[in-house]
Length: 145
Image 1: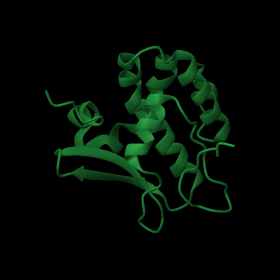
Image 2: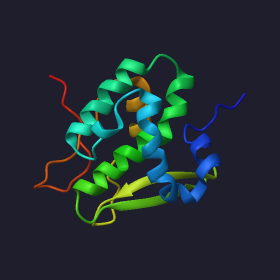
Image 3: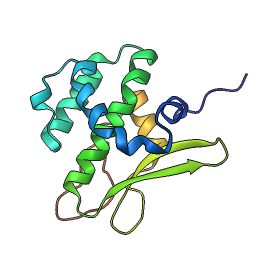
Image 4: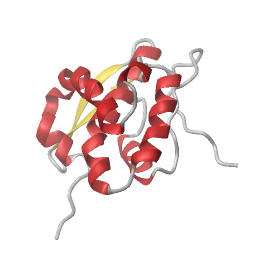
């Protein structure tokens, strides 16, 4: 039995049009993770609140899978709002024939590795943060001591 690609459901539902659905995915996020919509701001404060909500709500794979597109939309749009020149880009993984939503920086490089992004959230192992305003580099993760 072959396992499902972790972006399969997102690709099946939104395909290459994922960026068009970002506003409604973000709008649905507060209900999915049970936090006040007004507090989900597209900045470090909103992202920190989302990180806490993910840890608090993450009880099973089905819950995570239902929230993943909205979490991705929120994080991506937060990045775009805070890093000048960044934008959504749809990558076609030809091996799996799966559309993968990515954010690319002003120089055309990906803002984060899409495999690591999913894995990090699914395992609840590290919390993503926005890059500092002075350096529009890749998304960062806290370093372990």
